[in-house]
Image 1 (cartoon, rainbow, N blue to C red):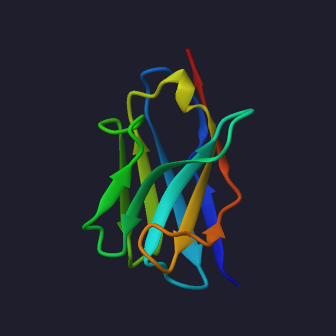
Image 2: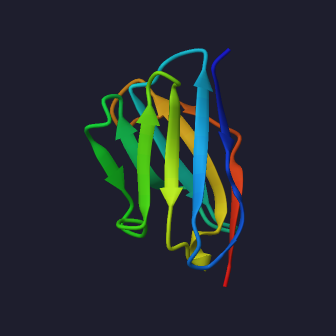
Length: 116
């Protein structure tokens, strides 16, 4: 069974940091990434990384604050989030796929709440 399981969400004050983790099982992924969905808004891309880790991509809104990384031995992807803002609040979803920056497997999501 292919699964992606996120962890690390929670409540943090503005300016604080959180580190999200996503552990995969059942298969490996060429691309892994993070998306988020705020209340009343559509799901949006946050960050993505290729298998080698040599190529990453970020939404403009998180560039310079968030860092994506992966451990292929553990089939785990991380999202280090610094200088958090209230607008970063939402459910964060991990995603995996067989092509660069294309995703077909999703986790169940983890809530991130940033208080101002």
